[in-house]
Amino acid sequence: MTAPPTQPEPAKGGDDMATLAKGGRTNTMGFVIRALGGIPFLFIGYRLYGVEEMGRFAAAFVIIEIFALVCALGEKRGLAQRLTEGAEQEGVPQTNLVFDGMLTSLLFSIAACALLLLFPVVIFPSGTNSPFDIWMIAAIPAFALTEILLAAQAYRYDIATTVRARAITEPWTKSIAVGAIFFIPVISEGGLALAYVTAIYAAFATSLWSFLKTYGWPKGWRPRPRYLGKMTARALPLIGADVIERGTRLLDVFLLGQSASAGAVGIYFFAKEVVSVPQKLKTSFEPILSPVITKNLKIGDYAAIASQVQKVGFWIIALQLGIALALVIPGEAVMGLGGPAIVGGTGALAILLAAEVVASMAVVSESVLVYIARKRNLAISVGVILLQGVLTVAFILLAEHLGLGEGFKAAGAALALFIALLVSSLVKALVLKTLLKAPVGNLRLALFWATAPAVAVGIAFTFLPEWVELIFGVPAILATYLAIIWKRGFTAEERQLFSRKVVAVEPETAPQKTV
Image (cartoon, rainbow, N blue to C red):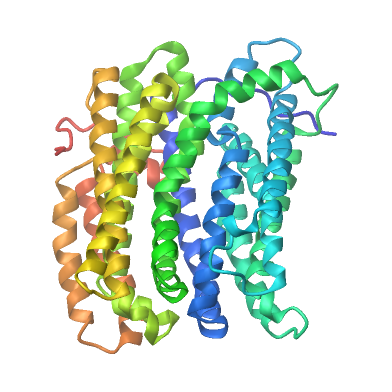
């Protein structure tokens, strides 16, 4: 067996940014692949299985993901700190530390599966599509363990495995399986659930293969109950942060499912799945950002952390804004992929895309706050999700009081999410700025310069047939936006990092204007 690679030395200055930029390049590629792989699942699911069936699947899906995040024990970000600290302990291989987390996660997953089997109404509030739906519960351990394995790979600066597992294996397996199972009479009615479970385990196998090649099998490892207990207790704020951060994206679906029909939930879920593509682009930066932050925290370099937050925050919002424009301008054509009944969710799609753009600052800020102000960050997150819950219920009740259709209920849920994420970004950025004593804002004027011409190009395509909007309009909007943001938004140093040039570039004398 090949010996595991040695622990990387803490990155400094330009090396840090080069590492983050490499992750950014890989994530951008992964976004494109993920988008191509996820669209067939939506198209096949809504066209072959139906809107109400997808609505019931969505209601189960959100509960599965929440339970899986709890069972992951916050290791998506906490593992980097454990491995950094473990490097100072002689005789504690990093592989063993990862297996500690995996064992604890597996135990929590078994308990979660047992709980849901005893109370299936929690996961299926509107009933099931088939007897096979109960198998979705089996996805919890695989999902949780995959999160830990990918975090371990990210600690070694391996983001390619995340792309392979989450952007290639999972969406493409799900899309292929859901179509294939539909034509197998014995299990066709359970196609949505079985395809989902198959995809989750395929992603787990992909990540496990890479992990074993990188770290190898543990040596002399045995369960350490006392250490596992301390690890779990220490992880509680991280678990809360992860669950609440993801919960803000799932609470609206859950609450909508309690007051609207399965069909309305199905329409809203289609919009949410479209939005999940740029959302994954944002959250996938967290694993590569965590080891860089923990190493700079160890040496107390707060200025470097603030600079990294600013730059990564801008990279994320720049890409997300472009994606949002490319999807929202031809919004009716995008929603029409799911069928004529789905087009009514276009308004919700627009609000949800805007919500993901404003959320970028909260996600990047939280990547630091979970290490330097865990309890304060958790308190803010709890306040934000409570705000979202209150606003969601209020907007749904208002729509009912005014006698508006279920499409307005969906738009109200989306608006509540937008407001909550905006508040989260503003508050967390302000707290982080105070703690680091340095600016962390991610806005640059180039965002506005790039938006105007992209909108003009997009509007021009709306006068053409929908298939032209999708095939030619979406790429044209993106190309226009990215060309301007690349030239006017990115500094010469950033362009060098993202283009992988080896020629040295002198720092620009005039820094980019921030807003």
